[in-house]
Length: 147
Image 1 (cartoon, rainbow, N blue to C red):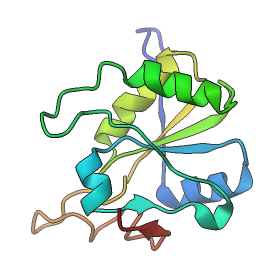
Image 2 (image 1 turned 120 degrees about the vertical axis):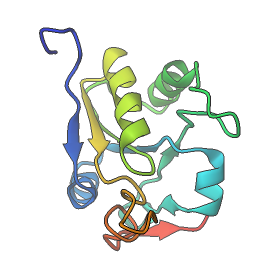
Image 3 (image 1 turned 180 degrees about the vertical axis):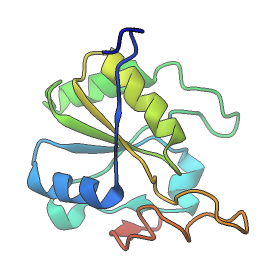
Image 4 (image 1 turned 90 degrees about the vertical axis):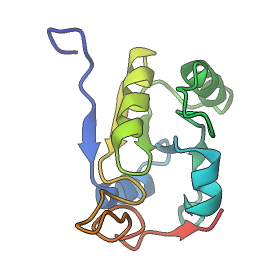
């Protein structure tokens, strides 16, 4: 925790996330995008490493309001699945903004190893204001499925 009381959240590249998910059976990937994004853009596919991606909206669709029950619902689900507060939790969204906020909230809830997937699922906008061409989970060639 910094002197300002804010917990520092590390950014991790998608390739590092993939390696850490493969190497640590306790680690978890949490996709905090909207239901529409999962359905129309796709989801990371962890089946090849014997895991599943956890899905919980940080912002609700279609109104884009922050989900006031995010931390409570995710904490309850993690606890029910036996995920310890020391497990490494990776949060992914479209490009790394919402996931950083979600990781921060869960760190404040006592999870000690919350990480932000810096490039997100689709990465930042390119010069033509399109996503999915510069960086991110999909561009890195990591497994994903259409929702």
